[in-house]
Amino acid sequence: MDTVTANIAAEERFRLLVESVKDYGIFLINPEGDIESWNKGAERIKGYSASEVIGKNFSLFYTPEDILRGHPAWELQQAQVDGRYEEEGWRVRKDGTRFWANVVITPLRDNSGTLIGFAKVTRDLTERKQAEEKLRMVNAGLEKRVEERTLELKEAVSLRDEFLSIASHELRTPLTPLKLNVQSLIRMLKKEFGDTEGDKVMKLAGTCDVALSRLSNLIDNLLDVSRVSNGKLTLNREVVDLSELIDEILVRYRNEISSAGTEVVFQKTGSFTGFFDRLRIEQVVINLLTNALKYGNKSILEISMREDGNYFEMEFRDMGPGIHPDDHEKIFQRFERVLNNSAISGLGLGLYISRQIVTAHEGTISVNSSPGKGAVFIVRLPKTEIKS
Image (cartoon, rainbow, N blue to C red; front, side):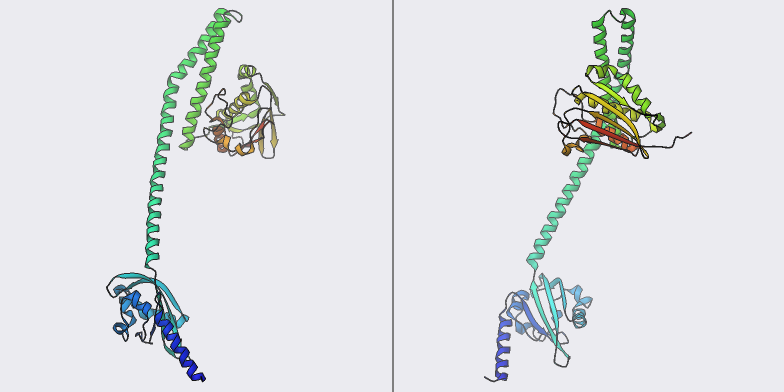
């Protein structure tokens, strides 16, 4: 077989191969866009037989809107400029239905570089397009449900915070005069019976006073949670000596310290005066003190104050059960208690509120602890300019 005969045979086999392909529409277009060949895949995808399309312009398969904007001719131009053109878009079958197609157009040139036509390959991707659209709709539905659920949760949180605020205020209304009356009763009993007589009555009255103080603190904490959630935690700054503040609190809490069987050692050098919210910093100190009394296992509580660059640093060191490193951040979250001891009261709000207060002062509060080795709480407050 000579070379010419072999080439003719090869071309015939290639033609038969192209014509027999059913999954791809493969056909030739002349430079003007008229169809010159048609394979079985093109017939299957587009619904036209070869006799119905050969000689007609390939724009026959495009949507009216694509034809109106001259898109078929533009595709041929782009194929000539870039050497290849590919896109996905809607095409039209013989029965008028649309399908989603991937098309590749390749310009064909002779040995001299003259354009002699185009080869076009079409794939029907309608099933994939439909699957993608279904997935998009499912995702859109899920996003909508998530958005709706998020709004519901926000409303629930808002209602909860509103309830906490209202409930706290309502509880505080009768609590304040009750506490004042109990304190007045203690003073009257002390005056009436003296320091040694009526010990039982005095003890009962003192117990009531402690219980009222604890209830008052819980209500204050609930109010603060509501304020933090609503962005209403404000600071009323004044000149405060932090070491004097701690001294005052330790005197005020001497009965609680004694009852807890704890010895407090306060180490300080000099004064630590800055511009702080006195009541809020007092709240932080009380929270850390009472926390140590609860969990300190009747050990020595060491409190120290020092200067560290541009910061005042308060440290509360106890020898309690300690906290696992995985829980160091958890204990500063709302309603979190890492030690499940039912004998220890509290809502798990003290450290959360303390962090909010310290953060509002542009400071930090952290813990250094591990199981069985006690805990060290460190409060760092920036030195502030004392306003005259």
